[in-house]
Amino acid sequence: MTREGFTEYLTPEQCLALLRQRSVGRLAFVADGRIELFPVDYAIVDGAIRIRNSGGTKQAAFDRGQDVVFEVDEPGPIETWSVVVRGVARLVPDGAPAAPRIAPASTDLGRSHRVEISPVVMTGRMFGAPQHPVPVAPVHPVA
Image (cartoon, rainbow, N blue to C red; front, side, top):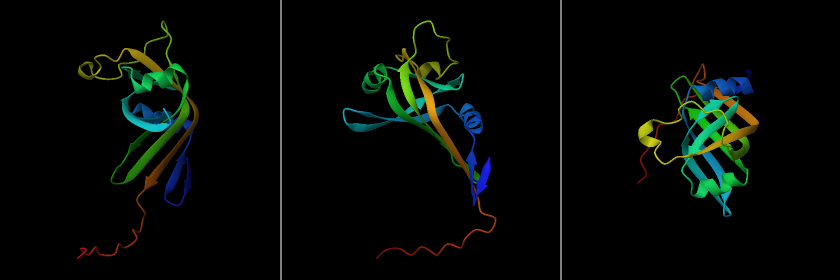
């Protein structure tokens, strides 16, 4: 971890460790010329991100090996972190090792397509509260 101001830049290993602590992220990609953004349940398997998909808009993109951006963050009172993964999402072939349970059974119904995001670039930052907070001007209502 390197520190610059109040921001610490994370190594890929630190990013993966943080991703393993969470189970919901955001997946962005281009479909039909438009940017799509979806919340997804996920698990980390051998350094890759696994999600389950029920088809639709996301499915067509994954059939082609789509470039994607995956993001997870965790805001906190003392520190906040964010991890962004740029990679390629593809369908997981039949017979590939299973991932740990990705979502509770009640929300996993109909999600039969397994998708894996292979990271190409992984970046992360952790933001700490300043030691001496900058004073904030009072807020006045707009008339």
